[in-house]
Length: 218
Image (cartoon, rainbow, N blue to C red; front, side, top):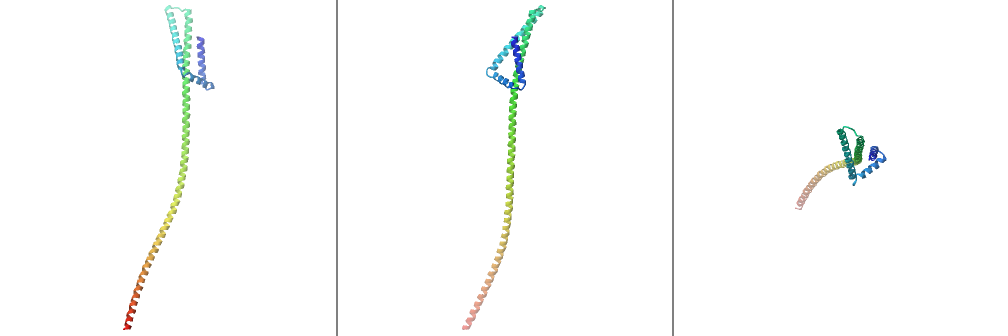
């Protein structure tokens, strides 16, 4: 019993040392503990732990009985001393084994939590880097689009200036043509008036000629 407990305690201490330091063996130990905690493993571990705890309680009860007998008898029996030492050693070993088993369980749990947190942090960092890269690419695309829009704006401004010059020239030509047409209309009116005057003069001459011809005939 004692040799078995010593072996268990030494094994547990070795497992704790392996879990504390990052070595290739730690991955194997963690994989083994993961398998133990799957399926019926937790039930078996709890059963063994409960059995050891019950034996521990029985050893403590035996020690209390021996101590009570010493008090009642007032003398110390060598056999009781040997039994007391045996039960004390076994209780100490069993308590230590249970405590070390609890330490192994907690270390395994915290190592798994640390690995999960580390993976989640790496995923968040990758996502943040991806978002930063996406923002940089988006900013570059926006800059390129802004440059294109500026070029289009310059082209439109130059085209607008050209069209404005053309419109101004057309307006000037229209004003000149309007003035020229007004001059033509005035000239046309003057010619019409002269034509009318000439017709009136011709009609008066015709009348005079006809009047003189009629006098000669008489």
